Length: 77
Image (spheres, helix red, strand yellow):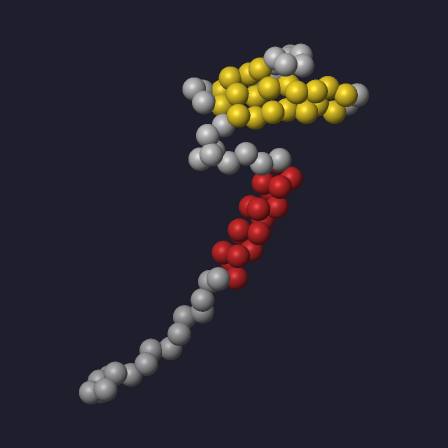
């Protein structure tokens, strides 16, 4: 993990197209601004974790049970 110190209005550049700005520091809370292409999804960790949990639940419930074979006309098997 890279740890950086930044002051209000200072920025961090990630790659060629993501910029993180320190917007405000108040007590133990820091407000960040994030500029990124729309193709880059940006979430708070707790929201990301909830989305992943819902995706896992959806994937588990969508597993269909195996259906019995249906005989086809003319099939003597």
